[in-house]
Length: 323
Image 1 (spheres, rainbow, N blue to C red):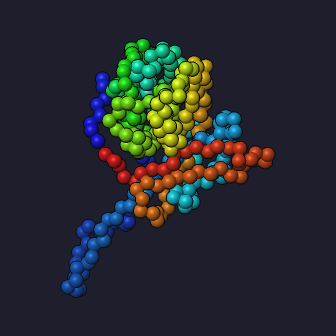
Image 2: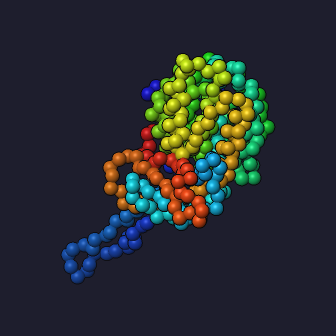
Image 3: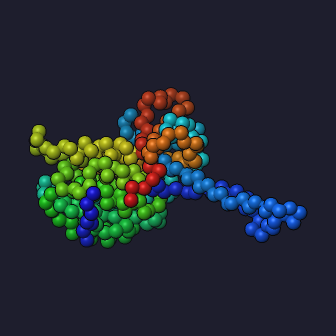
């Protein structure tokens, strides 16, 4: 894989379990010839796996007020004991907002930027230490502003976004996820694009793995022109949909500014109504580097059917790093 140029988690806790340390000054048994054996320290790190989970009803509205007993977590099909449970986690948000500025977006870009500006002001709360980084991508990927809670700085960066040429969609997902991997708390990437990819140096699989490795929720807003033709490039579009599903995010289609604003509002609402489930993995039987995660909701209040609910979470995590 060639080097990607940027122009311009597993986030986990560790529960160390250490054997009782032998006396480092133990002497040989004076009554015998055999030396007293010294037991070496053995340290086992059991990592807490965090799973940010969204539950919505059949209309897409977030479902609040669920309890820990309503959830079941499975890793590789094996039930896990939930060690941490939180509704509306107070953990700060780190958001990468990546905007497609390729030539194909030139007609809609000014309206998209204003809609994005409204989203930024609704989602970044300085008192909660939320931060946002703004990226734009065309033939290359440019970080317009690094992670910050300074809304005026983000506004100024939005004012300097300009149209480019080709589209490096997978590179944008990869590099945005790479930046998020270093953050702690809740990590989110929002991509606004018409879905094409014509210039990326990484492929779909590299971009998806990095997003999963960063534990980023990917929300894709796919801009569909009113005059959309049957020959429109939909390869990147379908890839974004799958990446959104695999990371626990969501995808939206927007064919107007009204729909775009609506998508941003729904993303903001979801991020305020998430559940955090954490567990220490039990003994693993599979040899795969990738561990699957499934979350189920059960034992709901009377009158509510499980079939009406949609549960979204990341599909799994890697036990090793790709870089």
